[in-house]
Image (cartoon, rainbow, N blue to C red; front, side, top):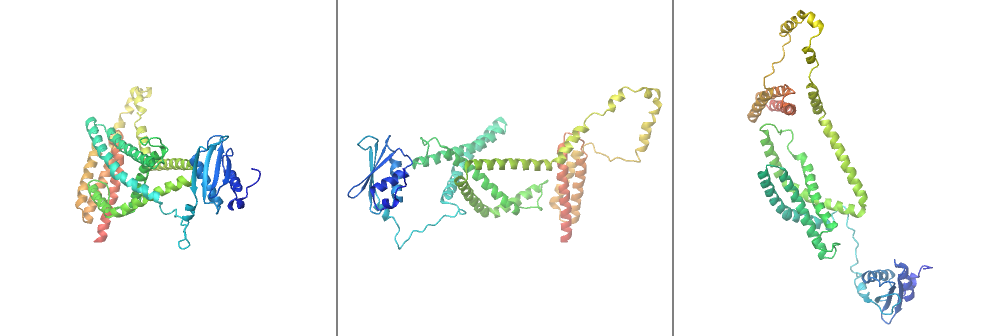
Length: 446
């Protein structure tokens, strides 16, 4: 239109001004607005090359009349027809007196309270309740039959991959049921974009996948927060100490069971709240970019950390392969040179000299099977540690661990147990340090 319509005249009830305002606000400029003021109502006719959509047109007219706020007009008759025709295709009447009755009275004014973003919205509470029901019914059902099926298939085929496939089927089946129920609820309330209730849409599939993500993340959060309260230096996983550690961890988890449950529920609520805020206020491309960067960063940091922790082990493996290369002198000893053939007597004293010099530099006696001897010493140390209650007892335990560590270090690289021995050297050394610490602790207590 050439000029902006007069909103002031429209608020006074002028039908032509109301038509100009509605025409100005219409998104489709191909639609023509006609208004006629009758005795007790305002007639609005919408003309278009195709018949205007009834629902969207009525909603738009109601919103426009609400913005205009004409006090003298209480009822509006909205009609739609095709351009060039006389008869209307549809008509609908709206009474604005009921809208005015809904306004709050002076004694009870309307209070606009904005829900704080830091507190979970009602939708987060509903989604958390749905997750708990899903976990207690659907996941438990699939878990029972999945574990049973996996154990039977593994026992028959002796292949543990069937058990892993059964666990994966538990999660996939649970997600499918969650998405199906979610789509059915949306279909009942006519909010689903899917044409059938038994084919979930992308929104329902996302809710099922999100439920699994929230469940795993909430459990991880609880475990991370519980780490500082778990047994520390007083518990080592070696030998028969593992049983003692198991009972300590079990007792500690039973003490913190109620607290862990509360933390778990709070984590579920705020994870759903975070997902809602991210989905509403951040674009999907930004979320995908952030997740990609976070994933790459985690993989890089984990790789660097793992490489730094196993640098020494990688070096020993490389050195073990280089040490296995055949010596160069073996080829030379097969065919003696001319000098060796001319003076063979010069080589004869060499074994004698080495035999004489051996007592001067005694080499450590290596048992025929150092690995088995080390395991025996470790077993003795573990058994003694169960009843050790004095400084002398713990010193004996430490001596056995020290001997076991030295024997494990003597396992040759060509042995089949070489890699296991390298790992147990580190483990036995930790046990030796712990035994010395306990000896010092008992001595200080006495």
